[in-house]
Image (cartoon, rainbow, N blue to C red; front, side, top):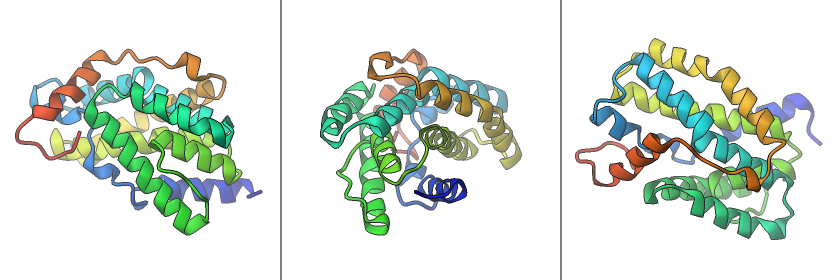
Length: 215
């Protein structure tokens, strides 16, 4: 088993922007929100980010990660199928599937973990369990990495300066920790989403022109 500091270092690497999952290419519908005038500055981006984490992809991905961390290998295909079915748009499904497959390839090559091409939270949760990495910390850092990727997208789209983007990211740190703690006690029966505007923006992005991001 890794020591606590070794576990944190491994998770930091898996969730670093340098880890080749391609997270920089996706905005989860933020590009639509900016194009249609709903996210225009630091305050509106911070509110959007908090809503998406607490009521949308953040909460659902944290629950899926927790379930994958606990699941036996034979249960993963059904859990992964549910994760794909829960995606509210084709681009969101591609986002989680492609990032998960990329994560699985790199983690298999570097850590020797034989991982199938799962959706991102399912792949990370399963890999963390097999590597002996703690569930709550994995979920919290996954959520923070998701938020950091969206903050990077906001810098290019709104645009936000680096300080404003980092302020928004700092503002959801405690939220990421709380959602991770809650997810550890939840199951797939608790999956739900109420980020309706963000989901509709993700759907509308499929026809948005011009665009920089894949979602």
